[in-house]
Every structure is written in structure tokens, then in C-alpha cells.
Image (cartoon, rainbow over all chains, first blue to last red; front, side, top):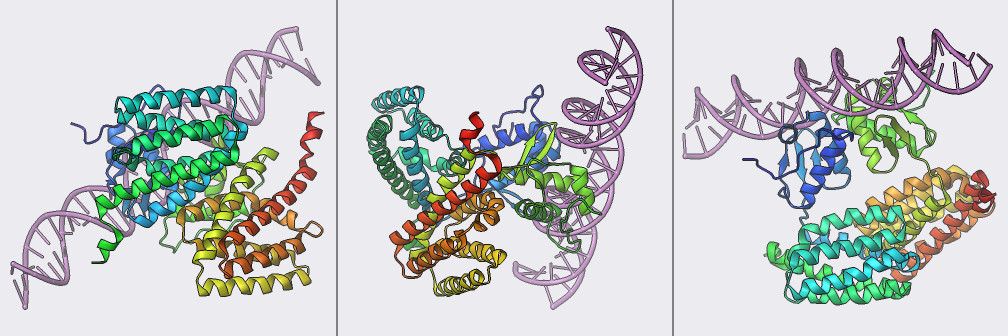
Length: 235
Length: 235
DNA sequence: TATCATACTTTTGGCAACAAAAAAATCCAT
DNA sequence: ATGGATTTTTTTGTTGCCAAAAGTATGATA
């Protein structure tokens, strides 16, 4: 029985192996298939995917640059994990700023197709909440933010948001499962969607910042349940 | 005679070769040692640095993730170059936001040592302008922004700013050589420095945003001199 | 039993060789 | 000459191998 549940590489693909390995590992990390701080050895991954060490090593180097892996020379490759309250604060401080900018730009640049999809998600998420469908909520939350991100048309902004987004992913499910958080997120999404489709950039920015701030707080609660509060650590 | 003027790797260093190669290439790209769109072949770099292809390849993959190199599978790796007006706009739109945030956070978190250095740079840059020392100005401009960046204490913010900073580097020298730009930059720095050392976060953010916006405009002038305006392209 | 030194194993770092694809050069027909 | 097909060369993608470092187990000694 395999240690992990990671997809195999497609031997008929014309993509270089390093890219396929990169994609597989990235997804596995984001989906929590690996434990934080877990050590990944080149051979183990290579054997799982039926490739040699080289493409695995190259994928490692790429993922290191995105902070998804931490490489210590002569020691090994480790799955990056959020370890401190400060790290969460740092990530969300930047994310609040950039998602706010994204909402602002999206409100000014959004096209009809994107506007339509944004409205569709607003309906779908409402249904998910009625059915208490947590996974559906997460899926739509992701799609919602992606549309906004893409509507900005700013490649650099999109890159940075992607980086920040995956870091929060591990906590997202737990965060949304908190009492009341899902309903709040719905309302935040709704008015945010209206501001963007309505083209009110400044309002969209403010709503987005408030939305991210709420998610921030919510994740901190989850985090401190797991790790204890900073105050407790001092004891 | 060597094709490029790039530093050799230190064979006595305990750092892995991929890191050394990475550092050498990164610096060479930022300093304009390679031409934009120039093709780099693994062997050529490897021979120049007296290493095998493997560390070079790994360095390539790392630099690709930072948008300093562009890799096209089965074809080669190319030095990334800013090609369009839109790319400059995208970069500076995000940079304005993040440098603004950095100034804001710096004003709140700066320590005495950093405050001292910030004041020192303000004096030094004044001297450089009197002597019309362009390279000195650039050096201090870089140091100035670095202090602010470090004063934020936010690792993620620092990473993103680094990425954006190097992209603008190629244009910085030309931009500052414009008539009057250097003196303007001095004044922008001065009041910005005062706002930060004085702890006025909101003011610091506004001054920084205006400073970045001025640099943005200045770089656009340089860019359009070289490439022609968008309007001209339509002809 | 605890600790330190030593041998052994595993894993990373780096290199050279092979396979396959793209680029360049050559040749031929028009 | 010029355009296109074909061969040759170059370069990338991949594999396996060896060396060096780190990690682990063993065992002797206090």
C-alpha cells in the first residue's frame, strides 16, 4: 500500500517530467497530502512517480522558491508549515492589501463573462449553505476569488495572490467549519460581488479588505485552538 | 576573452554549487550583464563557471520561478525582459501598493538603528546630488528602500518587494539620469524618511505611493523613448 | 546504564553519458 | 539564386553512478 495518495505522471505527455512532478507535488502539498515538516526524500518520490531523481530534484528547487518546500543543504527537503502566529499575521497583512487591490482593479476591468460567473457563484454558494455542504463552500470560495484575481488582468498580482492563497489553504476548511463563519462569508461574498459587478471599485476594495480580515480572525481562532495562544506559550 | 563578466564560483565554499550559480546568475541578470531575451545554454554557463550542467540547471529552475528567466521546454532558457508598457504598469501598480504598505509598517516598527541609518542615507544622497554622482544615487536609493523593507519585519512582504524591485532595476539608472528626476527623488526621499522616522504611518504610506508613482512615470518616459509610444505602434 | 567513539547505512550533491528533440547546415531540384 | 527536403550538429531531457556528508546503529568503556 502506498504511503501517499499522489497522482502518477502521464508517460504519454509531452510536458517535461520536471513539470509533471512539480504539478503533482504542488497539488499534494496544497491538499495536505503531506504533513507539514515532513521530510521528502528524492528517491521515495522518484519511485512513487516512476521517474529518476533528476526531475524530482528540479521540481524541489521550483517548489522551494514558492515557499512550499524548505530545503536545508546536505540535509533534505521538508514540507513548509505555518508555525507561528506571526507568520499568519504576515501573510494576511499582505493578502489583505493585495486582495483589496484585486477587488479594486476587478471592479474596473471585469467583462461580461466574468460578471456572469460571479453572479452564478453567488447563487451556488447560497445553495451550499442551505445544504450545509462544507466542501462545496470551499470550492466556490476558491472559484470566487479566482474570478476576481483573473479579472484584474495583472499577471504579477495574480502570481502573488496565488502564493499567498495556497498558504492559507490548509486552514480554510477548518476555518469555514466554525459556527457561523460560513453564513458570514456568504454575506461578505454577496455584497463584494455586487460591488464588483456594479463597478464600484473603492467599495469593492473595502468589502474585500473586511472579508479578508474576517477570514484572518477566523483562522487565528483555529490556529490558537491547535497551538495554544501566544499568552499560553509564555507560561 | 570571456563573453560575459560574471564572477566565478568559490570552490572552497561549503554552499552547494546550485546556490552559488544561482547567486552569480541572479546578479548578472539584475546588473544587465545579460541582454534581455538572450538565450543561455547550460553548457556555456557551466564552462564559464567550471561546474557541470546539473547545478546550472537547478539554478535555472529557481530563477525561472522569480521571473528572471523564461524557460521554453525543449528550446532553452532566455533572460526575461520587460516587453510592454502594460507589463511596466502591472509591476508598478502592485509595487505602489506594497511599498506603500511597507512604509506604513516601517513607520510603526522601525528601531533606533534603522532610524539612524535612514537619516544617514538622507545626508549621503544630498551629497551625491551635489556631486552629480549618478551611481551613488542609485546605490543609496536601493539602500533606502531596503531599510524600509527590512523595518517592516514581514518576510512575505520583503520577498514580493524583492521580486518587483529587480524588475525595475534595468530602468532605474536611465530613469534617474533624466533632467530633474534626481532632485525630485531626493525631496521625495527626504519627506518620506521624516514621516517614517517620525512614526506617522499614514503619511509615510502616502508619500511612498507618490514616490513610486513618480518613479513609474519617469520609467515610462524612458521606456517610450526606447520603444515608441503605444499610439505610435498602432500606425 | 549512560556516554562517547567508531563503523555502517542512507541520502544528498555533483558528474558524465545516453536519448530525443530542436536548430543549423547541406544538398538538390526548380 | 531560391525553396524545400534531408542530413548533421547542437542542445535539452533523463538516467545512473560515484563521492561526500549526514544520520543511524553498534559497541566499548566508565
